[in-house]
Image 1 (cartoon, rainbow, N blue to C red):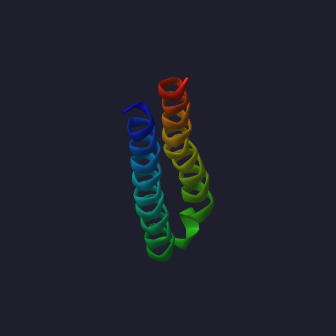
Image 2 (cartoon, rainbow, N blue to C red):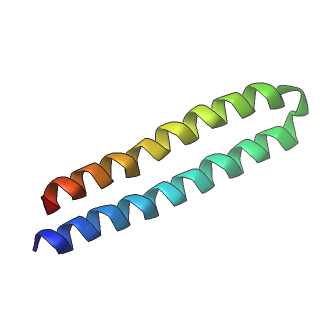
Length: 69
């Protein structure tokens, strides 16, 4: 059961992070298209958001390794 739990945790975290990244990036591009003068500010904020979103699957991988061992 631990193997199944670890696989589900890692898989769902990767799925959720990919959806989150897609939403953040698409909304940033939409904002850049509406107001091009704010593109540098939006880009910096996007990178911070993507970095925070990518932390979730990394933590999930650590949890799944804890479930395995």
